[in-house]
Amino acid sequence: MNLALTDRLVAWAYHLGWVLVPKLPEPVAAWAFRLVADLLWWRHGKLVRRLESNLARVTGKDAADPSIRDLSRAGMRSYFRYWMEALRLPAISKERILSGMHTTGGERIFSTVDGGRGIVLALPHMGNWDLAGAWLIHNGYPFTTVMERLKPESLYERFVAFRESLGMEVLPLTSKGGGTAHAFGTLAQRLRAGRPVCLPAERDLTEKGIEVDFFDGTTRMVAGPALLAVQTGAALHPATLWFEGDDWGLHIHEEIPVPAEGTRQEKVAVMTQSMARAFQEGISQHPEDWHMLQRLWLDDLEPR
Image (cartoon, rainbow, N blue to C red; front, side):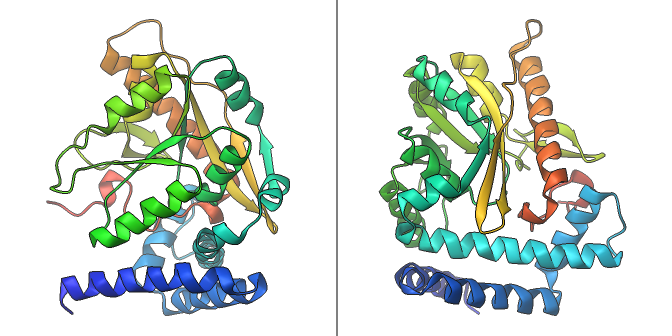
């Protein structure tokens, strides 16, 4: 199929989802998305096999272990629950979000920002990060985040408009031409003004990523969260998320301090490794809610 046509079909499917899914009763939407998740799991295609490979790393088991197959089914259901809830988010009331989000360490955000200091919340792709963002906004703490450009551009613009409608400030990771969009400078300004910044951070396979030990393997994670903390004096806190029955869980980990010694690059490396350990702790507790359907570890990457 023509790539441009594929992009248009994907964009059309998302647009249709944003219109239709919020109008469905929640049990009906949940059933439909769970059915799609189960069908894809049953087909055992490339994405599911990659998820199982990643879950085998997390659990220390062989990918052929029957328990990994069961875990990947739960993982696919979790992933599609995220999409169902993300599309329905405009229809979920503020009261439901505030009462359904079970947090530990949330006061770390509030006390930091209320004290006039910026905070960087670094998170892996777990649970429902859009809903956690809505929870933060409903508590009175609007934040800034960064988003990768999607194809086609209309789909990216729709995602940005959706997240901005929730109260987020969304910066592009790259310009329309593919160049640097200078998001770092804007993020630093927001942090120096004492505002929160939220950044997905467990996957950066560019040459700029920081190599870390992660579940007994080596991968690269985003340097931005640690670098922003070093540059601006903001607090760096990892955050991990999961689904808790019909509700949601969120844990704000302790602050990762800036090392007293070393070059800027060395400090960023130490802090990024600490971030990876916090992610590992959260993912170990809720592996089914870690939505990593891509290659992550360096020895899994195809040679260039």
